[in-house]
Image 1 (cartoon, rainbow, N blue to C red):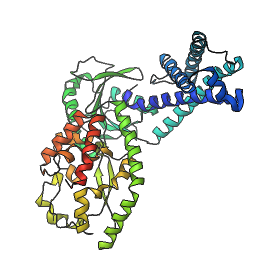
Image 2 (cartoon, rainbow, N blue to C red):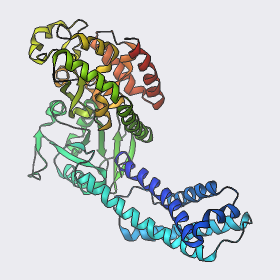
Image 3 (tube, one colour):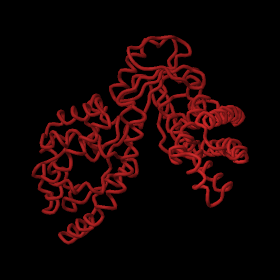
Image 4 (cartoon, one colour):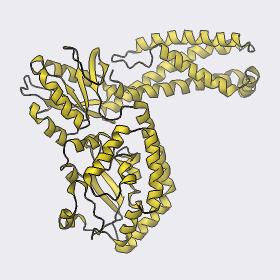
Length: 464
């Protein structure tokens, strides 16, 4: 299965299995030994907490070696149950060997008699529930990603059927491109144009990935199509069920038994990106709470100066063209948007930012200099529309002026701060800013995010 989209379920299963093993051990200890269960385990093992952690980790490892974290295209409760039974027998053997090897005091036979069957049953039940809930959320559009299928022939339709048939992937068909549409497509699979319309479709549709499913006769167009998609920061999938082909980079994956060659543009460090999102949630939630008094003071200051509204809302372009409403404290006069035509010629429209914009209010000047006007965007981060660190979020009118290579900035979530904000904030050159954003995407790591955030705070406090 395509690992980028099944990894979330895999990580969730690992975490739940480990937590469940620990909970079963503790719960049965209480039922068997009563209120003195903690005393019993302290007498049995020197470090009960270490023993608990080892038991949970061992259960995850045993499940792993039995293929229970393999991302299967065809999952069934019967096959899962059989694998869990085999894993439980191995776990029981390992546990008994551990007790014998370390010559630990006799453990209650009744406790062991219940421990492993209960663990197996609850693991199976919990996994079944998690899979169903996960698939249900995917079907309802949670974090959906859209695939543009290039080629509406049998290969394209077969690939689309495989995508929608694996709900846990969270993939949806954005539409098809083909010079000859051929047979009618499903009502929810729109025909978006010819092959030559690829670039235009990528600019006007939300597309995360491009699947190239062309017939033999058009195989010579694959390189050009993949090149355009990669240049715009899209992941390219090439089903290899019909023809073997060599590419300079990429890796082979599986979709329902069909090998798929994947070309990934931008960071594909799945665990790192998951940690990045977790940090976004934790830090933004804490910051919203801690900075609430400061936000209230800023809101009262803006309101007392020239009245409401306190907030400024503007549509920005997010990951792969997804529009969202960005929040900021209002720093300009109330009719600033209607006066845009007065100042539009004073700066590059692709990165419109005036040092001495006549529409800025006195409070707004201070808020912009200290970046306090962007505090409300912590809510955008918490909702998953932005990240703490990433490329600058641009309004649609700026994105319309992008060249093709600029659009790769949309291959990562926009951020509250970024590389250009801490290295070239006063540089008015859009090309320079775009280059820094792309450099950030190409070199992305959690450590780079940490360094950027560490530089952001003093830069904001010093008004840089």
